[in-house]
Length: 110
Length: 112
Image (cartoon, rainbow over all chains, first blue to last red; front, side):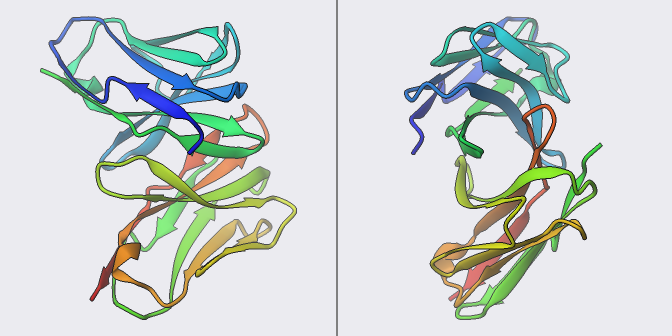
């Protein structure tokens, strides 16, 4: 257990509303990641961070933004949720060279 | 662009069998390779990490090998048990971008 907590664990939201998912770590690792997991697509990188206020886009970043104002927190925001963003979202950290994952957030956009 | 594939997509074996899961990647310029286990509705649990300079890693009944030049890794599970039933994913750590690229996974069922 790498001390990663995701919140909320489940959320249902309406199309067009903003949504923020939170990832919290307890061990001050520099690198943090947001992935989404969908049937037929596997895990795809949305955004990642390499330090406070240092972030970069991943493979599927359109419609998402991130912020990292503290080492321990990495926030993922869906500016205006769409049905295509219904997915399971995973946060990960890199400890030395090894990746560790949170338990995931299941987001449903109706 | 790095692409990772896993064969087979699904596998069903009787309890006690030894089995091999395969992972292939297209670009040999990797930093490391990691195997994960994912139970339904759960997060990913790290099983084994192989650095690019290593050939294999072992943990209990699990052994992972890495052949960077051929773009392949295998996960060997000895004496399989029903509790091993899960989806197994491999991920390559990239030299650039500090990111990981995942394979689609192999869904394993071990029958009692």
